[in-house]
Amino acid sequence: MLELPASTNHYEECDEKNPADKYYIGFDPVSERYKLLKIFPGHVEILTIGVDSSWRTVNSHPPKGMTLYSASCLSGILCWDCYVDRVGEQIMAFHLAQEKFIHIPVPEVDAEFDDVSVQLMNLYLIFL
Image (cartoon, rainbow, N blue to C red; front, side, top):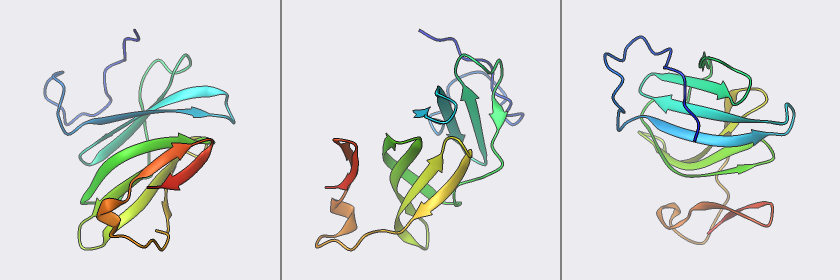
C-alpha cells in the first residue's frame, strides 16, 4: 500500500475522495519510474512514485468536456478512448516522459466507435 501526499489542488475544500477524480498509473521507460496521473475538473497533477514528495501540476490539459473511458499504458504513453463534447469519439494520450497530452487520430473501423475500445495486447495498442 502506498500513502499518497495531499493534492496541490487549492480548490478542494476537504480531503474526501471526489468521484470526479480519476487516477491512472503508468511506467515511464525514460526515467524508469512509475508515475501516477490525477485528472480532476480543471486540474491535472502527476506524482513520480519513489521520487516526488508532493504532486506536481501538469501544464498540459485534456480538452474540456472530455469523458475518459478505458485506459492502457504502452511504452510510456497512457491511452484512452474518450468522448469530447461537440467533437465526438477521440483517442487521447498522455506522454509520461514529456508530461503532456497528445491527440491520436481515430483509425477507420468497420463499426461505430461506441462499440470500439482501446486495449493492450502483446505490446500492441489494439481497437476491439
